[in-house]
Image (cartoon, rainbow, N blue to C red; front, side):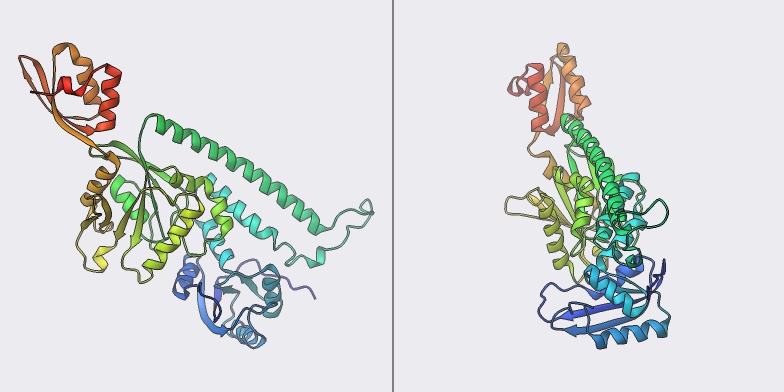
Amino acid sequence: MLFERPDTGERAVLVHIEFSGVTEREDPGEFMQLVTSAGGEPVYFVRGQRPMPHAKTFVGSGKLEEIRQIVVEHEAELVLFNHALSPSQERNIEKELKCRVLDRTGLILDIFAQRARTHEGKLQVELAQLEHMSTRLIRGWTHLERQKGGIGLRGPGETQLESDRRLLRARIKSIQGRLEKVRKQRDQSRRARKRAEIPTLSFVGYTNAGKSTLFNSLTESQVYAADQLFATLDPTLRRLQVADVGPVVVADTVGFIRHLPHKLVESFRATLEEAVSSDLLVHVIDCADEERQDHIRQVHEVLAEIGASELPMLEVYNKIDLIGQAPRIERDGDGRPTRVWLSARRGKGLDELMEALSELLAGDVVDTDVVLPPHKSRLRSRLFALGGVQTEEYNEQGCTLHIRMPKADLMRLLAQEGEKLENLRAH
């Protein structure tokens, strides 16, 4: 008898199993957050222990019967597993429970589908969903696995399943082509920024660490920020004025999570490339989270996967108001900033963050007085345009400018003007 699956379900039974032979364990608390972020209503949390997953049904027959009774008792429409299930395991569990079954990857994909707001974000989510679905097409379609028949349809034909797979492949190829165009457009924008020599920094971090709240506080933007997992999916770029540097492009990126499905990392590569091409990564960390060390490790793993692990990084420990800490900058043996402790929501420590960004992005800074005779007015105006002039005084020799700006910018300007700094310094 064919089991017809319901289309949707909100009342959910959650399942988390501890395996004795597995070191990389999932977090039940984070799983609960994922479910509520997806809009699910947890009605029961089933826990258990096994030496290893059952090949056919992931859990043993006794635990499966226990889950079935709970589903009936609570009239649940959905059973969510805090694990990755194989297509056959999902299919077998559904047949036994007579309700919809979703694994951790499917749950994350569902959240991504709800959060995507831009056309590009929706394309990326659809690509990840289709690639995930392509391995599960047989589920719920067994009644169609036969040759088409009837008038005008006799002959070898193709099974409905093969037809669906072919349509899926065509759709996947189409989306990949469109995302490739997006990637090229982003490349062009990045090259233009490089030519204009505008530094770029990207906010990265575990989901719900406070990246978007910090982004909004610094750039006075209205990016959607909420106390939920994956509130931000679509990358947002804003300009920020940084002392001794000038304009800087800031990118807010999608949050990471433990065991982020590989297909999602692949699908969101166009978004994550903003991080790969940055001059500086700002790693936002929830310092009040008990799992923060594990979250830091998970972020580093994803950065390694996308090729961004060697980029300069500033750690920002956010939410200090929850642990009673004061804003501060931590430095290494050379005096370079390595960590900033702040509260984005309370607006505490933002000045310290801007100071750290200025030091890391500016590099060597020239702070000196130069004397410009009247005929060097072009050089004067260009120094003002670069934001390097702090004060200006006039005397018989011309004007004395107190300048403070990145050494690289000043040297480039003087070379273009055919000047040398030592000839202009005030004596």
